[in-house]
Image (cartoon, rainbow, N blue to C red; front, top):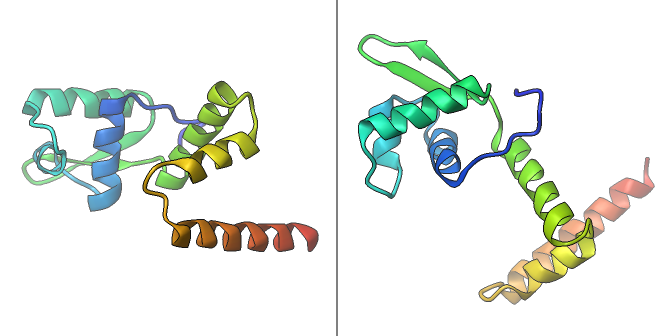
Length: 128
């Protein structure tokens, strides 16, 4: 995994999401997995940039390199949420959670599951 907290551009995140969903992939496979129609060379450039940053690596295949993520989806999500919490919500997890709960389309069922997760986290924290 990358030593620094990963930070991705929107396009890098699209490529990483494809790798997280499909596992080690060629440039052509990543290109097919992305919703936007991108040139092969664009996807290759993004993958090479991610590789230079230490977020992906590649293995040489029979005909094409296979790229794989070195950063887990969970690590990327945690870094992104920390950044959003710190920059948009002045470091407040409460304000972030309130905004998430207020998002249009958030169902009562989702909120109940969040409450259950929070209770589980609180209970686990007491046992330490």
